[in-house]
Image (cartoon, rainbow, N blue to C red; front, top):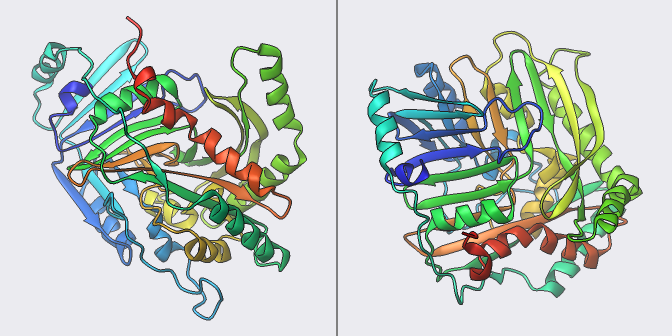
Length: 426
């Protein structure tokens, strides 16, 4: 199916990688081709999207990039530092907002496959997919080294500077991210995505293409889902590395995360932030925490995940829900308005699509979007390959441990790029 989709310049494949987590309606969903699309930059992006969606009562697939924060979080121009938000260079080149009406949709469930096509050629599409060779493409990544945009010492100094802001009362928690990149990369995106899926299968994974730009995503986190009138957010805050090959130590690591006062404190902060965001759009008195401090296991890490729900007023559009809650609190910190200014001031490179959201909207208005983390970003034309990782910084954070946490979160990506782990066993 992906071999077939790779012939198209625009497609999105969302895959839950077989996780039996609640609220997944399909195993995977593929959208291919663009009958119509919208691409726009921050400024009037949400208004433009509202007009576009009004013309298309249909499936919509696409993304919100982090820089839309310019529209959702007004800033104080007199605040220092970071009083205004500045446009930084993003070599991968994903636009701030892109949505398309697909020509074809393929829905995968446990025991069924459903094809929807604007051209009413379902049988032809099924035969084309079935006839595609199942061979895994070849790729060579020997010698591919991604370098940090900031040195370890620069990172540690920045964390200490952010802790001074927290000490002064500017913020309670700040999610600080760093980039690793190469401008000489030549990879086969499908090959590396398959490798990433083997080394780091996660329930909100995605393989996404816009012309020469690719997203290879192994996200464990849901940003926002609407099901009927219920709005659901599942922020992650709290990480502990797995201990492969040692069940007792692995269990102890999960229990240690559950008992960690630091991680529980960070998780509560983001839960309060999300509750506040949902309260902007949900009916009064309906926002509730359905699960607090849930511990979920993934290939490289345990994650502390909470679930917050609220009830939307009838006829609320997906655009209103996104605009009221974007960017997600787990990737900013609290209070959001001030923290996004500090992020802009201290982070060296543009986040671009990283810490944005990718997903879909149904014709009925339901939607599901992930948090774009644990991801590779690739510009095939310019040979630019990068990934970003971050962590939540509090006054009690140990800068060295925060750096190590970033490396743990990137382990699945590094393994996916390692030629020794790319080929599956026969």
